[in-house]
Length: 395
Image 1 (cartoon, rainbow, N blue to C red):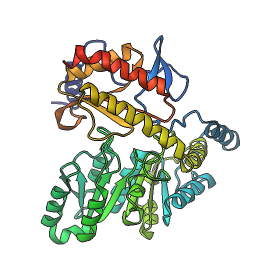
Image 2: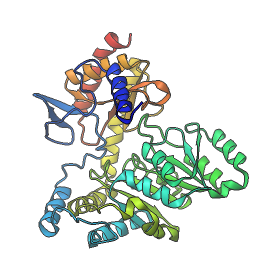
Image 3: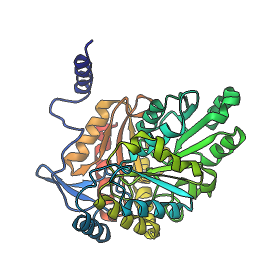
Image 4: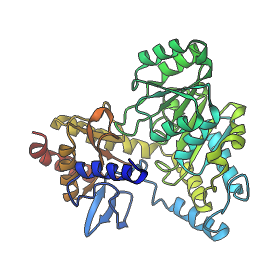
Protein backbone atom coordinates (compact mmCIF):
# COMPACT_ATOMS: atom_id res chain seq x y z
CA UNK A 1 0.00 0.00 0.00
CA UNK A 2 1.45 3.38 -1.03
CA UNK A 3 1.67 6.44 1.21
CA UNK A 4 -1.39 8.06 -0.34
CA UNK A 5 -3.37 4.81 -0.34
CA UNK A 6 -2.85 4.61 3.43
CA UNK A 7 -4.58 7.97 3.75
CA UNK A 8 -7.40 6.75 1.53
CA UNK A 9 -7.86 3.76 3.85
CA UNK A 10 -8.06 6.06 6.87
CA UNK A 11 -10.63 8.22 5.08
CA UNK A 12 -12.73 5.16 4.23
CA UNK A 13 -12.74 4.08 7.87
CA UNK A 14 -13.88 7.54 8.94
CA UNK A 15 -16.63 7.69 6.32
CA UNK A 16 -17.87 4.26 7.43
CA UNK A 17 -18.45 5.67 10.92
CA UNK A 18 -20.21 8.85 9.80
CA UNK A 19 -23.41 9.19 7.78
CA UNK A 20 -22.98 10.98 4.48
CA UNK A 21 -22.87 14.73 4.87
CA UNK A 22 -22.62 14.72 8.66
CA UNK A 23 -19.68 16.96 9.52
CA UNK A 24 -19.29 15.96 13.16
CA UNK A 25 -15.58 16.72 13.27
CA UNK A 26 -14.19 20.21 12.80
CA UNK A 27 -17.64 21.71 12.45
CA UNK A 28 -17.17 25.42 11.65
CA UNK A 29 -18.34 27.94 14.24
CA UNK A 30 -19.29 31.03 12.27
CA UNK A 31 -19.55 33.59 15.09
CA UNK A 32 -18.66 33.63 18.78
CA UNK A 33 -20.89 35.75 20.99
CA UNK A 34 -19.62 34.86 24.47
CA UNK A 35 -17.92 32.03 26.38
CA UNK A 36 -21.21 30.11 26.21
CA UNK A 37 -22.91 31.08 22.91
CA UNK A 38 -22.05 31.08 19.22
CA UNK A 39 -23.54 30.55 15.77
CA UNK A 40 -23.21 27.46 13.59
CA UNK A 41 -24.72 28.01 10.16
CA UNK A 42 -27.88 29.97 10.86
CA UNK A 43 -28.48 28.48 14.31
CA UNK A 44 -27.56 30.15 17.59
CA UNK A 45 -26.10 27.45 19.79
CA UNK A 46 -25.04 26.86 23.37
CA UNK A 47 -21.33 25.98 23.65
CA UNK A 48 -20.96 22.89 25.78
CA UNK A 49 -17.92 21.43 24.02
CA UNK A 50 -15.09 23.86 24.78
CA UNK A 51 -12.31 23.74 27.39
CA UNK A 52 -13.05 27.31 28.48
CA UNK A 53 -13.37 26.14 32.09
CA UNK A 54 -13.26 29.52 33.83
CA UNK A 55 -15.07 31.34 31.01
CA UNK A 56 -12.27 33.89 30.55
CA UNK A 57 -12.14 34.05 26.76
CA UNK A 58 -14.03 37.36 26.65
CA UNK A 59 -12.67 38.86 29.87
CA UNK A 60 -12.01 42.60 29.49
CA UNK A 61 -8.61 42.27 31.18
CA UNK A 62 -7.33 39.64 28.74
CA UNK A 63 -8.68 41.40 25.65
CA UNK A 64 -7.20 44.73 26.72
CA UNK A 65 -3.81 43.17 27.39
CA UNK A 66 -3.78 41.46 23.98
CA UNK A 67 -4.75 44.66 22.13
CA UNK A 68 -2.07 46.69 23.89
CA UNK A 69 0.58 44.07 23.13
CA UNK A 70 -0.25 44.11 19.42
CA UNK A 71 -0.06 47.90 19.36
CA UNK A 72 3.29 47.96 21.15
CA UNK A 73 5.06 44.82 19.85
CA UNK A 74 3.29 43.75 16.66
CA UNK A 75 1.53 40.54 15.73
CA UNK A 76 4.37 38.03 16.01
CA UNK A 77 7.99 37.54 17.07
CA UNK A 78 9.10 35.94 13.76
CA UNK A 79 11.72 33.88 15.57
CA UNK A 80 12.46 31.29 18.20
CA UNK A 81 13.36 31.95 21.82
CA UNK A 82 16.97 31.04 20.96
CA UNK A 83 17.09 33.74 18.27
CA UNK A 84 15.15 37.01 18.13
CA UNK A 85 11.90 35.74 19.69
CA UNK A 86 12.87 36.13 23.34
CA UNK A 87 10.86 39.14 24.50
CA UNK A 88 10.65 40.48 28.03
CA UNK A 89 7.05 39.28 28.23
CA UNK A 90 8.10 35.65 27.75
CA UNK A 91 10.54 35.83 30.63
CA UNK A 92 8.02 37.70 32.79
CA UNK A 93 5.39 35.00 32.22
CA UNK A 94 7.92 32.29 33.10
CA UNK A 95 8.75 34.04 36.36
CA UNK A 96 5.05 34.51 37.13
CA UNK A 97 4.34 30.81 36.56
CA UNK A 98 7.31 29.79 38.69
CA UNK A 99 6.06 32.08 41.46
CA UNK A 100 2.50 30.76 41.07
CA UNK A 101 3.69 27.19 41.62
CA UNK A 102 6.35 28.25 44.14
CA UNK A 103 8.88 26.45 41.97
CA UNK A 104 12.43 27.33 41.06
CA UNK A 105 11.89 27.86 37.33
CA UNK A 106 9.55 27.61 34.35
CA UNK A 107 9.88 27.20 30.58
CA UNK A 108 7.14 28.54 28.30
CA UNK A 109 6.47 26.66 25.05
CA UNK A 110 4.56 27.79 21.97
CA UNK A 111 1.80 25.19 22.41
CA UNK A 112 0.66 22.83 25.14
CA UNK A 113 1.40 19.92 22.81
CA UNK A 114 4.99 21.12 22.51
CA UNK A 115 5.28 21.48 26.29
CA UNK A 116 4.91 17.71 26.59
CA UNK A 117 6.80 16.95 23.41
CA UNK A 118 9.74 19.15 24.40
CA UNK A 119 9.88 18.32 28.09
CA UNK A 120 9.59 14.55 27.71
CA UNK A 121 12.01 14.25 24.79
CA UNK A 122 14.49 16.45 26.66
CA UNK A 123 14.32 14.51 29.92
CA UNK A 124 14.65 10.95 28.64
CA UNK A 125 16.40 9.23 25.77
CA UNK A 126 17.54 5.82 24.46
CA UNK A 127 18.10 3.42 27.35
CA UNK A 128 15.64 5.24 29.62
CA UNK A 129 12.04 4.22 30.31
CA UNK A 130 8.79 6.16 29.91
CA UNK A 131 6.15 4.57 32.15
CA UNK A 132 2.88 6.13 31.12
CA UNK A 133 -0.80 5.80 31.94
CA UNK A 134 -2.59 3.91 29.17
CA UNK A 135 -5.06 6.77 28.65
CA UNK A 136 -2.36 9.40 28.20
CA UNK A 137 -2.83 12.25 25.72
CA UNK A 138 -1.30 11.96 22.25
CA UNK A 139 1.25 14.66 23.08
CA UNK A 140 2.62 12.41 25.84
CA UNK A 141 2.84 9.40 23.54
CA UNK A 142 4.51 11.49 20.84
CA UNK A 143 6.99 12.98 23.29
CA UNK A 144 7.96 9.48 24.39
CA UNK A 145 8.39 8.30 20.80
CA UNK A 146 10.53 11.34 19.97
CA UNK A 147 12.74 10.66 23.00
CA UNK A 148 13.75 7.19 21.83
CA UNK A 149 13.16 5.79 25.34
CA UNK A 150 11.45 2.46 25.95
CA UNK A 151 7.70 3.01 26.39
CA UNK A 152 5.75 0.95 28.91
CA UNK A 153 2.05 1.51 29.55
CA UNK A 154 0.27 0.72 32.79
CA UNK A 155 -3.48 0.29 33.11
CA UNK A 156 -5.36 3.54 33.50
CA UNK A 157 -5.24 4.86 37.09
CA UNK A 158 -4.18 1.39 38.32
CA UNK A 159 -1.47 1.84 40.96
CA UNK A 160 -1.18 -1.93 41.47
CA UNK A 161 -0.29 -2.37 37.82
CA UNK A 162 2.07 0.62 38.01
CA UNK A 163 3.95 -0.88 40.96
CA UNK A 164 4.15 -4.27 39.26
CA UNK A 165 5.86 -2.69 36.26
CA UNK A 166 8.21 -0.63 38.42
CA UNK A 167 9.20 -3.76 40.30
CA UNK A 168 9.94 -5.59 37.05
CA UNK A 169 12.22 -2.77 35.92
CA UNK A 170 14.59 -3.38 38.82
CA UNK A 171 17.54 -0.97 38.69
CA UNK A 172 16.10 0.64 35.55
CA UNK A 173 13.41 2.29 37.70
CA UNK A 174 16.03 4.96 38.52
CA UNK A 175 16.03 5.91 34.84
CA UNK A 176 12.25 5.88 34.57
CA UNK A 177 9.95 8.83 33.97
CA UNK A 178 6.41 8.15 35.23
CA UNK A 179 3.87 10.29 33.38
CA UNK A 180 0.26 10.88 34.45
CA UNK A 181 -2.40 13.56 34.02
CA UNK A 182 -4.30 15.61 36.58
CA UNK A 183 -7.66 15.29 34.81
CA UNK A 184 -7.91 12.98 31.81
CA UNK A 185 -9.45 14.63 28.79
CA UNK A 186 -11.78 11.87 27.62
CA UNK A 187 -13.59 10.78 30.80
CA UNK A 188 -12.63 13.62 33.13
CA UNK A 189 -11.35 11.35 35.90
CA UNK A 190 -8.38 12.25 38.14
CA UNK A 191 -5.10 10.45 38.76
CA UNK A 192 -4.56 8.82 42.21
CA UNK A 193 -1.64 11.16 42.75
CA UNK A 194 -0.81 10.39 46.39
CA UNK A 195 -0.28 6.70 45.60
CA UNK A 196 1.73 7.53 42.47
CA UNK A 197 4.03 9.86 44.42
CA UNK A 198 4.53 7.14 47.01
CA UNK A 199 5.60 4.69 44.31
CA UNK A 200 7.91 7.10 42.52
CA UNK A 201 9.72 7.69 45.83
CA UNK A 202 9.90 4.00 46.69
CA UNK A 203 11.44 3.14 43.33
CA UNK A 204 13.58 6.28 43.01
CA UNK A 205 11.88 7.27 39.76
CA UNK A 206 10.97 10.70 38.35
CA UNK A 207 7.40 11.96 37.99
CA UNK A 208 5.88 14.27 35.37
CA UNK A 209 2.30 15.46 35.90
CA UNK A 210 0.34 17.02 33.02
CA UNK A 211 -2.12 19.51 34.55
CA UNK A 212 -3.59 20.64 31.20
CA UNK A 213 -7.23 20.06 32.20
CA UNK A 214 -6.79 20.58 35.95
CA UNK A 215 -5.07 23.98 35.94
CA UNK A 216 -7.60 26.52 37.21
CA UNK A 217 -10.04 23.73 38.09
CA UNK A 218 -8.55 21.91 41.09
CA UNK A 219 -6.82 23.19 44.21
CA UNK A 220 -7.41 26.14 46.50
CA UNK A 221 -5.73 28.58 44.09
CA UNK A 222 -6.27 26.59 40.89
CA UNK A 223 -2.81 25.03 40.69
CA UNK A 224 -4.32 21.66 39.86
CA UNK A 225 -4.30 18.14 41.22
CA UNK A 226 -0.89 18.54 42.86
CA UNK A 227 -2.21 21.43 44.93
CA UNK A 228 -5.42 19.55 45.76
CA UNK A 229 -3.32 16.81 47.39
CA UNK A 230 -0.66 19.16 48.78
CA UNK A 231 2.00 17.47 46.64
CA UNK A 232 3.40 20.22 44.40
CA UNK A 233 6.80 19.82 46.07
CA UNK A 234 6.74 16.05 45.49
CA UNK A 235 6.12 16.19 41.73
CA UNK A 236 9.35 16.58 39.74
CA UNK A 237 7.92 18.26 36.64
CA UNK A 238 4.51 19.81 36.00
CA UNK A 239 3.39 20.62 32.46
CA UNK A 240 0.25 22.35 31.28
CA UNK A 241 -1.35 24.48 28.62
CA UNK A 242 -2.69 27.99 28.16
CA UNK A 243 -5.46 26.79 25.87
CA UNK A 244 -8.01 25.74 28.47
CA UNK A 245 -8.58 27.68 31.70
CA UNK A 246 -6.26 30.45 30.45
CA UNK A 247 -8.05 30.72 27.07
CA UNK A 248 -4.95 31.22 24.94
CA UNK A 249 -2.37 29.13 23.09
CA UNK A 250 0.87 27.89 24.61
CA UNK A 251 2.25 25.64 27.29
CA UNK A 252 4.66 25.47 30.20
CA UNK A 253 6.78 23.25 32.41
CA UNK A 254 7.65 24.13 36.00
CA UNK A 255 10.08 22.37 38.32
CA UNK A 256 12.33 22.77 41.33
CA UNK A 257 15.08 20.82 39.59
CA UNK A 258 17.82 23.14 38.29
CA UNK A 259 18.18 20.81 35.29
CA UNK A 260 14.92 22.17 33.86
CA UNK A 261 16.77 25.17 32.44
CA UNK A 262 19.02 22.84 30.45
CA UNK A 263 16.00 21.80 28.39
CA UNK A 264 16.31 25.12 26.60
CA UNK A 265 19.47 23.78 24.96
CA UNK A 266 18.42 20.21 24.17
CA UNK A 267 14.67 20.36 23.46
CA UNK A 268 14.05 20.64 19.71
CA UNK A 269 10.35 21.60 20.06
CA UNK A 270 11.54 24.59 22.12
CA UNK A 271 14.62 25.54 20.10
CA UNK A 272 13.22 25.28 16.59
CA UNK A 273 9.77 26.88 17.00
CA UNK A 274 8.82 30.54 16.79
CA UNK A 275 7.96 31.90 20.22
CA UNK A 276 4.38 32.78 21.23
CA UNK A 277 3.04 36.08 19.92
CA UNK A 278 3.10 39.17 22.15
CA UNK A 279 -0.71 39.21 22.28
CA UNK A 280 -0.82 35.58 23.42
CA UNK A 281 1.72 36.19 26.16
CA UNK A 282 0.02 39.38 27.38
CA UNK A 283 -3.44 37.78 27.46
CA UNK A 284 -2.07 34.75 29.29
CA UNK A 285 -0.41 36.91 31.93
CA UNK A 286 -3.73 38.70 32.50
CA UNK A 287 -5.62 35.39 32.62
CA UNK A 288 -3.15 33.96 35.14
CA UNK A 289 -3.90 36.84 37.51
CA UNK A 290 -7.63 36.16 37.17
CA UNK A 291 -7.07 32.44 37.72
CA UNK A 292 -5.10 33.07 40.93
CA UNK A 293 -8.03 35.04 42.34
CA UNK A 294 -10.68 32.86 40.75
CA UNK A 295 -12.17 31.04 43.74
CA UNK A 296 -15.68 32.21 42.87
CA UNK A 297 -15.20 31.12 39.26
CA UNK A 298 -14.08 27.66 40.40
CA UNK A 299 -17.05 27.38 42.75
CA UNK A 300 -19.44 28.30 39.95
CA UNK A 301 -17.75 25.84 37.58
CA UNK A 302 -18.14 22.99 40.06
CA UNK A 303 -21.78 23.88 40.76
CA UNK A 304 -22.50 23.58 37.03
CA UNK A 305 -20.48 20.38 36.71
CA UNK A 306 -22.22 18.64 39.60
CA UNK A 307 -25.66 19.75 38.39
CA UNK A 308 -25.14 18.30 34.91
CA UNK A 309 -23.40 15.15 36.12
CA UNK A 310 -26.01 14.25 38.73
CA UNK A 311 -28.88 14.87 36.32
CA UNK A 312 -27.43 12.67 33.55
CA UNK A 313 -26.65 9.97 36.08
CA UNK A 314 -30.20 10.11 37.46
CA UNK A 315 -31.65 9.80 33.95
CA UNK A 316 -29.78 6.52 33.46
CA UNK A 317 -26.95 7.64 31.20
CA UNK A 318 -23.59 5.95 31.71
CA UNK A 319 -21.35 8.87 32.64
CA UNK A 320 -17.77 9.64 33.66
CA UNK A 321 -16.37 7.91 36.79
CA UNK A 322 -16.61 11.12 38.81
CA UNK A 323 -18.08 14.63 38.46
CA UNK A 324 -15.92 17.37 36.99
CA UNK A 325 -15.85 19.96 34.24
CA UNK A 326 -15.61 17.16 31.67
CA UNK A 327 -18.87 15.19 31.73
CA UNK A 328 -18.74 12.32 29.26
CA UNK A 329 -21.73 10.23 28.30
CA UNK A 330 -20.51 6.75 27.39
CA UNK A 331 -22.33 4.96 24.56
CA UNK A 332 -22.00 1.37 23.36
CA UNK A 333 -21.85 2.16 19.65
CA UNK A 334 -20.83 4.97 17.27
CA UNK A 335 -24.41 4.98 15.99
CA UNK A 336 -25.83 5.78 19.42
CA UNK A 337 -23.22 8.48 19.98
CA UNK A 338 -23.91 10.03 16.58
CA UNK A 339 -27.64 10.08 17.23
CA UNK A 340 -27.19 11.75 20.61
CA UNK A 341 -24.67 14.27 19.26
CA UNK A 342 -26.93 15.14 16.34
CA UNK A 343 -30.00 15.41 18.58
CA UNK A 344 -28.21 17.83 20.89
CA UNK A 345 -27.01 19.96 17.98
CA UNK A 346 -30.50 20.09 16.49
CA UNK A 347 -31.64 21.47 19.84
CA UNK A 348 -28.94 24.13 19.78
CA UNK A 349 -26.31 22.44 21.98
CA UNK A 350 -22.76 21.93 20.74
CA UNK A 351 -20.79 19.07 22.34
CA UNK A 352 -17.87 16.86 21.29
CA UNK A 353 -18.28 13.52 19.55
CA UNK A 354 -15.51 11.00 20.35
CA UNK A 355 -15.42 7.73 18.40
CA UNK A 356 -12.99 4.79 18.47
CA UNK A 357 -10.03 4.62 18.54
CA UNK A 358 -9.90 7.99 20.33
CA UNK A 359 -12.41 6.89 22.98
CA UNK A 360 -11.17 4.48 25.68
CA UNK A 361 -11.97 0.74 25.57
CA UNK A 362 -13.63 0.88 22.16
CA UNK A 363 -16.57 2.90 23.47
CA UNK A 364 -18.02 6.07 21.96
CA UNK A 365 -18.45 9.31 23.87
CA UNK A 366 -20.54 12.43 23.79
CA UNK A 367 -18.30 14.76 25.76
CA UNK A 368 -19.63 17.87 27.49
CA UNK A 369 -17.46 20.59 29.00
CA UNK A 370 -19.07 23.00 31.42
CA UNK A 371 -17.59 26.32 32.44
CA UNK A 372 -18.03 29.02 35.03
CA UNK A 373 -19.90 31.30 32.62
CA UNK A 374 -22.78 28.89 32.03
CA UNK A 375 -25.92 30.09 33.74
CA UNK A 376 -28.22 27.91 35.81
CA UNK A 377 -30.87 28.37 33.11
CA UNK A 378 -28.48 27.11 30.41
CA UNK A 379 -27.53 24.02 32.39
CA UNK A 380 -31.20 23.32 33.10
CA UNK A 381 -31.94 23.52 29.37
CA UNK A 382 -29.14 21.04 28.61
CA UNK A 383 -30.54 18.66 31.22
CA UNK A 384 -34.00 18.98 29.69
CA UNK A 385 -32.75 18.12 26.18
CA UNK A 386 -30.75 15.12 27.42
CA UNK A 387 -33.91 13.94 29.18
CA UNK A 388 -35.99 14.21 26.02
CA UNK A 389 -33.39 12.36 23.93
CA UNK A 390 -32.87 9.49 26.37
CA UNK A 391 -35.93 7.41 25.50
CA UNK A 392 -35.44 7.65 21.75
CA UNK A 393 -31.68 6.95 21.70
CA UNK A 394 -30.69 4.91 24.74
CA UNK A 395 -33.75 2.80 25.53
